[in-house]
Length: 344
Ligand SMILES: Cc1cc2nc3c(=O)[nH]c(=O)nc-3n(C[C@H](O)[C@H](O)[C@H](O)COP(=O)(O)OP(=O)(O)OC[C@H]3O[C@@H](n4cnc5c(N)ncnc54)[C@H](O)[C@@H]3O)c2cc1C
Image 1: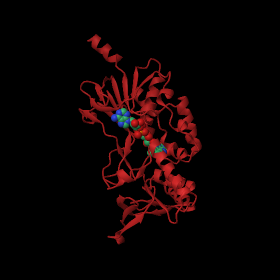
Image 2: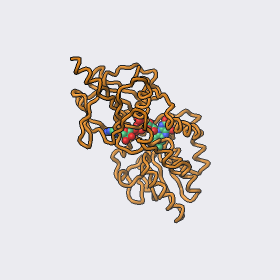
Image 3: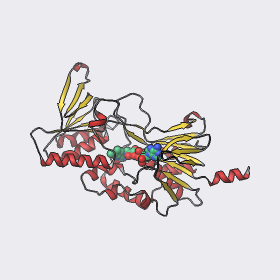
Image 4: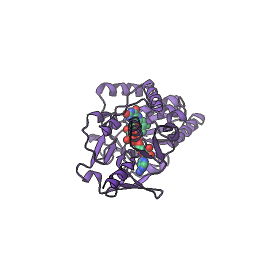
């Protein structure tokens, strides 16, 4: 009995996913004296500071600042990093299986696999639209901006789909970069931009778009995407049946995210008291701990209805704040709430 419990104690706390939730949890745990072994399983080489992606696009920041390597970030921090992807959780055996065929035991499991973009099954989106979530996406957009600036044609047009925080901020950034050479359309199926924002922030966003001549089309649904064309349908009550085919030189998809799927047997959510789902790490400090062996960090909850952009966290922080936070992260002085809750 004693032998088995000491063997269990030697198992690491395993953190699946090294985004904000996973990385900060690992750093917070590692900052404790006598912390357990910590294993971070993350398939990417680099941590991506997503709120700084806009500055990477405009080349105000460089990629090493926005996307530091995990081996550099975690050097001498007491956290082991494994470049692999968790493919399945075997909760009964207390281990996870990985894409590269490993079987990794854990004492506690933190699932922080985050979210990913979704096309909601709209035809053409996966193949033709550019998302805005990765370094590769930024490179594609930089090439497109360069092309539009160096080969300007009359009425060249970019469409951004989804007038949430990412869509609004990216539309402003692209308008600045394209300096009037391209019409920018921001398309939103709902009645207004930033549906979850305060009225003041919405007004600020609206005037930022106006100043840059970004055209906002609300109550407009994307039906499909074909090479060089966006198929739209007006959703306003009095506009039934009015469809439009909009010529475009590029489409950027910021229309929503969904939870990154991870198979588990049994499902942590189906085992009472076994799992703790923490939505929005910002509010973790006030959430009671119920985790016995799994903590599930979700920045986005599953979509209830298709094709409805979900709000992200409040994003209206100025660049200065972001830079400070990025620098802090590198220096690891943050005491993230997600880690605090686990260790209580
Ligand atoms: C362009 C952009 C700008 C944003 N700006 C802001 C902002 O200003 N303010 C704000 O509050 N929020 C902002 N957000 C939202 C914020 O970035 C997310 O809420 C946050 O990244 C969520 O963190 P997370 O750790 O839950 O998930 P993620 O950041 O999605 O990280 C999940 C990690 O898990 C890894 N992973 C996935 N599946 C597996 C698996 N099976 N096994 C192992 N690893 C896996 C992924 O590679 C990834 O590294 C922005 C988002 C975007 C896209």
